[in-house]
Length: 166
Image 1 (cartoon, rainbow, N blue to C red):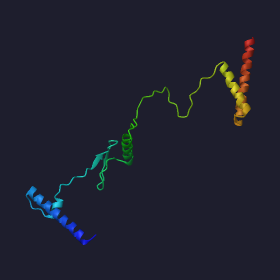
Image 2 (cartoon, rainbow, N blue to C red; image 1 turned 30 degrees about the vertical axis):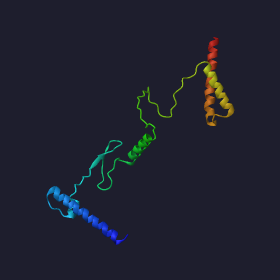
Image 3 (cartoon, rainbow, N blue to C red; image 1 turned 90 degrees about the vertical axis):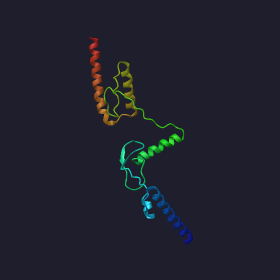
Image 4 (cartoon, rainbow, N blue to C red; image 1 turned 90 degrees about the horizontal axis):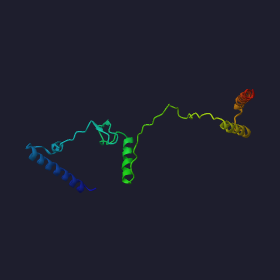
């Protein structure tokens, strides 16, 4: 950059400052020197707090830097997603709330207790137990408990058959 360009730039700055001073004198009627003319411009006060454009919560504004529009990066990202969806012609995701009534609270992962089978249902269940025992799908650690339960089942069947004959 040559010195003539720099000198011309500075001369333009001085002329603008002088014009500001003249405008201030005409406006206020008070003489103002060029350096003070720059200070005489109305200053906009920086707000102490703003409301987020996305979540509508109040947040404090830093004393320096750009004045933010959103309270956090999360809100800024959600607003960007919304504007991008609107620009592409897709509708934005809407949250729909509905009340779901539950008879009794049930911990997550717990299965709903099934009603015990009756009559022919027991035959299918016992046949499935036989199939799982034959194919080795039952753990060894459970075999003793199953054996005790089957002995109790056989005793109950025997008692029932005897009482039926009498």
